[in-house]
Image (cartoon, rainbow, N blue to C red; front, side, top):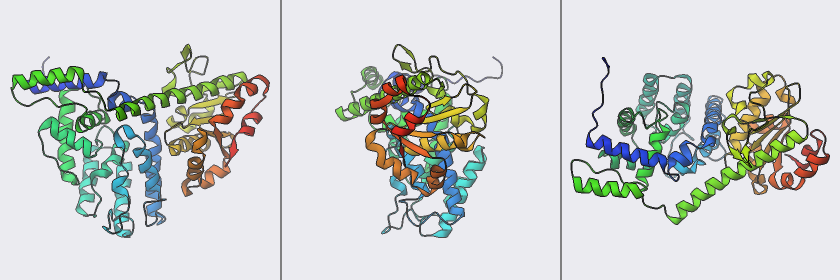
Length: 431
């Protein structure tokens, strides 16, 4: 077609295409275990809200002088909990007093600069503005505050700023032959340019969400996939293609982690199914999180015989409300109860979505809210609810903790003999 320029399939591009295709189909790759993971999408909203809290705390001078207990710890931990790719993402932000890094805790001026950087990233949505914000931050020469902060930017602008960690850098260097170094914003931006070129060359295989190529580079950097050899060495290329076809088995530890992740999804879906069936038995209409509608459950889908659209009564809550795991509605379309199931994922993210429902609609403040989690996570639930960012709201809105054990023990009798919400409120814990 006139006006279009085709990209020539050089041996390198063709080989990388084969690698990407194999990576996408591998059930143990980050593409399958993280990029397509439904919980990943849910995290964007909660992390964005967490960054807003960091900005507000810095402006109000209530941020504190340490990482522990700060709003920054809350939001960075919610990133690090996505262990498939972000394990250790909190390490660069830990306050190391002997080294005085990162110098955003006890230096008020640096803290304000960091807050302004985050505020700019929140407000702008163009590449030029984001790059300008990075350059401005870099000029301040804040000790210890390097491109690890790009992970915060990724969750604000996933199509513009790629994620960043050591494995991703190693993967990029292995794939391209570059020599990108850690700790420098200029090195990160140079790598970003190269990443965008790779995405453009393989547009049919890579999403414009840069988390996809971030996952590919992470897997290469972790040694899960060998990059294609450079140049025209046909023997090495043949050997590499043979390796690619079978892909080295993950270590026993990695396989166990992958199995645990799949088991986590199964259990999460199972708990949603319990709440779905219990709600319907009690006479409520049931909403299942929008991104979980097609999940397999028993002999059908999780959203079978549930609402296919949210009632108008909660329209003010925004997209986050549609991602709440389970909502029970009265016949008039008014929410009767909302449940967030947090099997292994961030308690923080679930709280944010429930508060979005409660604060984003006229009827939300009267809706009973439940965090549903394993019995051994009660301490973690209490700690999150007692954070300054949540303490007042959680108390005013009567957010409760519903342990798996109590739900499993009583759900059948409640379904058979229960009436309304009193039985659920009776087995939940008011924290």
